[in-house]
Length: 271
Image 1: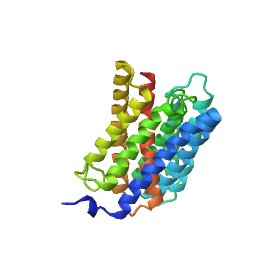
Image 2: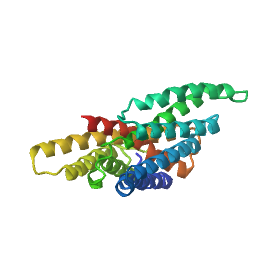
Image 3: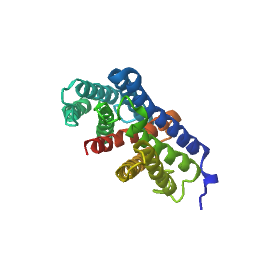
Image 4: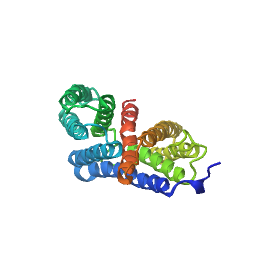
């Protein structure tokens, strides 16, 4: 039976690095808003979007990578501008970007030089990274990352804590595995939920029962979503069919779950 001591050092190191990078990314968005307002938050989000696109392409190396990079960064910039400039911003704005981006993806495949290898894989890779980059634009919506005057109470920090806890425990104890070959274990999932609940309780306060229940619910939902999103990111890298460069793997495992958690943050804010 595989034990924590038999886990490859490279995998352990990637987990620990992803925990640090994910926490730093969330802090950059929250502190950017606190220091420079909407402009600071917008700059931080766009940098994360570009980093995710670059990391994704270096990790998976899909066919037509150059065109995918251009379309994904353009979609991210368009989504950011729409969200930032709209008088009544909402998640529906992302469809204005995602729809044309998917049409552009088809044109991109038609313009590739023959023989066009792995067309389906290239389209799927573009759709995934465009969706993830646009999802990060949701962090620009009012209230999704919390009050700029109180950065310590941001729900994004709950997500960051959950992701970091899962990575740290998975670096030490990835068994029993959630899925074979991905390096993510049940203890890490439980740690994510526990960390999310703990941080959420600290943010909401424990003076009244309603605050406790709200903190527990928020932490449970965000912790579970973060843990599952992190598992998906690790599964994508495990199924890449090639040796993933270490920096690219860290970037994907740190930022893709943040993007996947953005809709959950929005849902809790609206609720």
